Image (cartoon, rainbow, N blue to C red):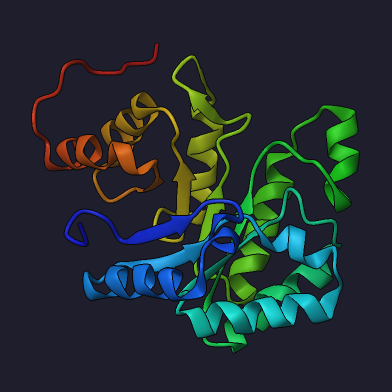
Length: 219
């Protein structure tokens, strides 16, 4: 599948439920097909145990063979300076930090935005820019409040994110296959999308320009 996908992500903390030898075997198999391997949103759970636990988590991920560590900035209850330190820590370990940002906020500095119910896209973009400056390899953009479905897709906000940050360093979460189709129709086959494994075949069909069952349009 390395011909069709760039990376494999272990969602949430599912890797913590697996035996280390099995996990290493799966990671090696992905590498054999030129597929990088990323953690999912598990760092926020580890951080509750203290800074030392996060350093050990990074070391464990490296020993297991992970290439990238995801940091869900919408859930991690840390100020920006401390989150930048985590990005640098992951980067200095030899792995690639991948912060996740979105328009829904649940903790830390984001709590004020969550309570106000207001979306400050400029704030989100400025933070993404600082993450990239600190060494982030890729910014994951959460679909909540942005691209949940084609009936709830804020195309103007997507356009502003891409205008400011470009396509190369952004990956959009696309849980709905119709959203994936919309992204490719509007931003081309090179747009980075995070999809469920069951959608890989359909996504490759779209990227290759093969005819589909329908097209998605917005007024």
